Image (cartoon, rainbow, N blue to C red; front, side, top):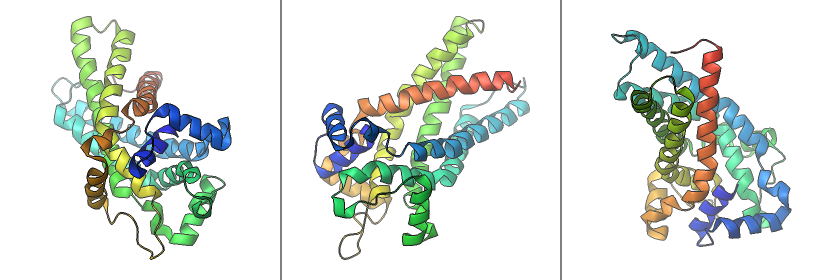
Length: 268
């Protein structure tokens, strides 16, 4: 929630301090305001999160099976698997992602412009009713771009770090290797995906003006206007906050996925 509000604050020329933004959110609705859109966030992870990980791991296992020793993959295979998984997962999950961004951005709008969705299903239903089915995929291109950057940064950096650490520390120190690799991945994920996340947020929350014209025509227009208004550094507005949103998520996701795969007897 704080991350989204910081991005919108940067766009509008407001505060990008997480402490100021947090106080504003608290003043608007108390502690529960921080969890606005929680059901949409859970739905997003159920769809997008599971798809991108499932597709990636299945593709990696396939490539490992094709390798000489049955257990290695190239950088291009990892990157390609991450790209495909990120694109497919985010495309299917875009309706939930759209609902999440709109619900989190709602309180920052003037009362007359608020959508006041009751929940993720109400958000999806009203989006279809008021804007048409295709509106559920507004911002799909930046969403897929962001997911691709995030997935490549997360999965490739994690797998590469694990390979390097296993050579240096030994495979027997598997927990140290797994945690250290996940922490490296968290930093890479935050830095590489934030610019795309910034653009995605702006495009998904936008509303047409009185003449029916949207603030941004497309992703390229949003990038151009954002640079003119905020400078290139504006794409990384709220990076520390974004890290605390993405970092723990990446670490928990990677460690949990590894344990589930072991329990299911998948992978080496």
